[in-house]
Length: 223
Figure (cartoon, rainbow, N blue to C red):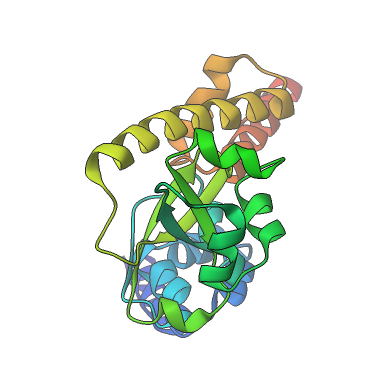
């Protein structure tokens, strides 16, 4: 009983400490032990640490990978721009005060003509002040091929467009993650999917769980 209360007290103390840590220190703390990892990975704590440097109001959405929270540099954010007639990469670069190559790199565009096959472009954030008191939405962009904290300057995401985008990108993103785990673990898709599901979609945690299980199986086999 005493050990149980000690564990609870330890978690409470860790929570008080971790709530004051920036993202890099939280990431390091999560590697110390299982208890530290569970507290340092608490959604409320990581969300607060994620938004704090930029004075964001909120971040909405659940990333496919828990590692999303480990990096809150400015490159993690982007502005959503719905394309209209007359838009060009060059004109958007001028409008948002960013480099043409930065827009093309973020959206995986080989040429300026790629703009004609898309409904929107993600624009890199050049001025962090634009994030102040804003709300970002975690999205796995189909073209950027990574999860991004997206800021909408006018209202929020369009429901129909965003539902379609999330459905397509989430399915493709999950498929890529499972494929990567399958190769790393050298197992079939079903096994990779199982470990991903019990790890709340965190590939690193899935690999860790698989490693622990295989180690246990070896020990039992030796015994």
